[in-house]
Image (cartoon, rainbow, N blue to C red; front, side, top):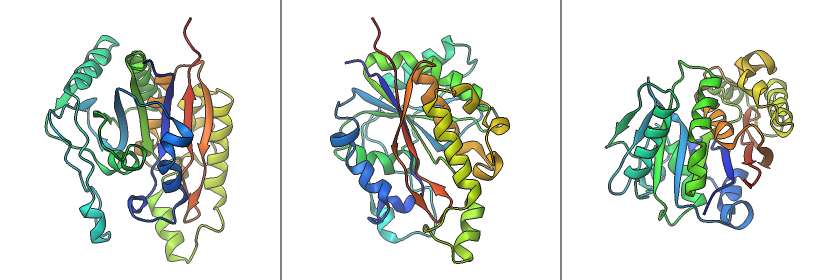
Length: 274
């Protein structure tokens, strides 16, 4: 069955995996009931935690290893598993689509599992871990338009029943979070730069101004404060590119942590093809 939607999920802190007080956790747990009841054939997830020099897909023939790419957290987090099956076929299809669209080199990694930008949200969205998953890397030395075009190249996957999910954070400034935490700040008050950027992003997406979002560094207020490094933002551009320029955006979740970390998440729905 064809898929008309792509998604951008803000996964925020790794503690989302164990902290029941984070509102985004309940949002993700309600995924199949309230957001997307259809079961996709497979999932392509683009995480802000896999950076490579060229587009790379993982092609796991068995079950994915769970990568604990975080340090100093409670021991219980390192005991969580998400052994979803891999999909070498989807990995090959992604490589073919990107190559055909002008990406000169696409690598395949036959060993890499799922990092926490992938397995933490998927653990709540599809807890049975029975849907094949393939992960695609980002290139932080390239720009947002490059990643949007990457998504455009992958748009045919939707007709093949593949759910494309970008996973990052709508705002992601870890240094600012540490300063807020050190100064005793909390979730009760949102710092102005984060709120302004988050509001701009919401308005731009809901109004279909995807080109403005591609040029966010010039167009958005406090772009460099919200994203000093673009790793957690580029998955959004892949998701919007795969949805298409005529897709309608919908804010499906909004919450904050530590006054500067936005969990805003979006659904992009393409009009049905005739």
